[in-house]
Image (cartoon, rainbow, N blue to C red; front, side, top):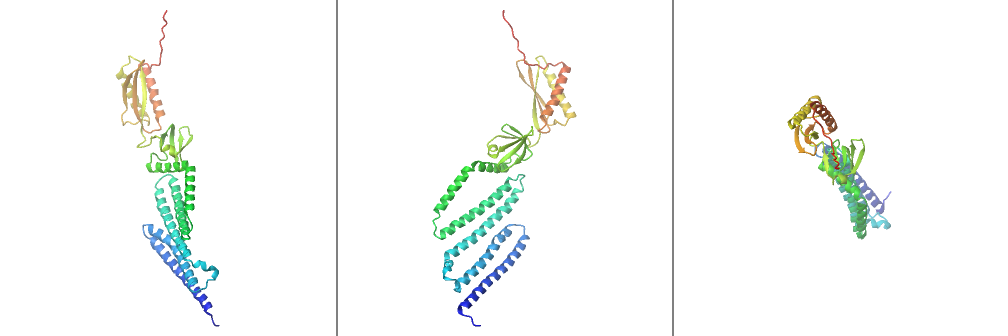
Length: 348
């Protein structure tokens, strides 16, 4: 059977495509071998590079083989000749480039971002990494789309203006969400507290149970859950009772009647603190408890007793232990604890 020129051209084109497919398969085996070698190294960067270029290069090889086959052997029908326009070739290369860049940046953020996120206790940074992965992909492909439209001499100014207006509208609509999101990032970076710490934020006092991307949750001593937006926390004064350590100074005011010996009051108060130290686990022996005579008030002598709680969550137990002993010892020693009095004299 004799073959015409046209038939031979189809055969040559088919052989070219088959050669391209075989070359792509060879490249595939090479890529797999490189992936295995890259897995043996300590760095992840070589894995990321190979993963980013592997599949796009194989697709590009087959596409180039097909393009060469149809352009060199004249087998393309006249109605499809527009495919050979260099603009389509340029657009194809832009797509391949965007594919490689988006895969590379996505894997960089995914691998190294999650490694950093695992060092923190909260999960907001994992969500931040996922958000960045999505944003990078969208930005790369949006840029590729704009480049392709520019190649085809399409005016991209309206698209850019529309994208800017849409972005501004979204930013304005989501400004609280964005503010809270970055507030959570600031909390994680600055670390004013961590989950489990006892804090006071504004009028709220309790234990931090969660630091999320939008808000922070505090469980109060009444076992109520307070949800505070992160942007409120970053602009407020925060008192952390758990850092740098858990001890807390407790101030106990004591008043006695005029005529009571100052040295006697100090002696009794210090004896009481030593008794609490011996019989309970509430108070630390160091720093040493101290008593100060601070004021001659209208109807009493005022003292302040300073003791150090072993932990920040023991103030009520300490006050109860000390005040109960003060009441008993003062009654035993005949020391009067004054109360507000008003003397009224009637003039005839």
